[in-house]
Length: 134
Image 1 (tube, helix red, strand yellow):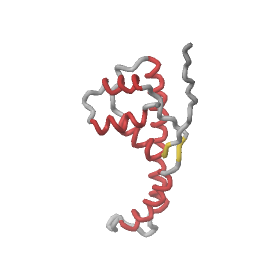
Image 2: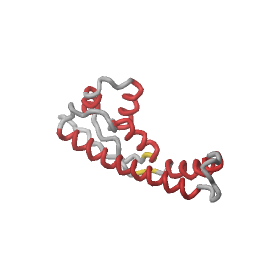
Image 3: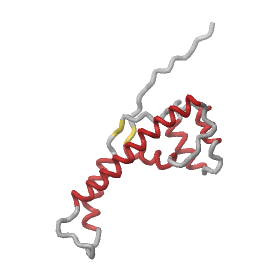
Image 4: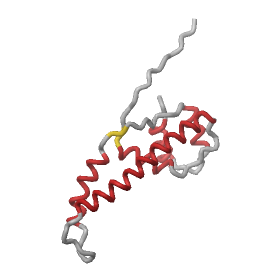
């Protein structure tokens, strides 16, 4: 008698910073070796990550404007402004997202990597750890 393992999908929350970094790594990679099913999962993940990246850009701009010293001039240094900006931006970046990035099986990860033979080993490691559903 054969038993099939049933996997309970566990939604692992990731921080915004991790998701934004993952998007930066996969933004320009190729996906030509992915099956149709894997490609759909990949495209939907990219849409979510791109949306978060857009939110990041907007938050960065808004936070920058909010903490800008009222008497700041172009000739002034950025130190005071940056000291106010960093902790607020960091607080935003460490918030968790509901984006599930672990979408690929081992085979699908291998297909994505084989579509991109020019990727360095360290980038492959980050991509695989971000996308591989164990």
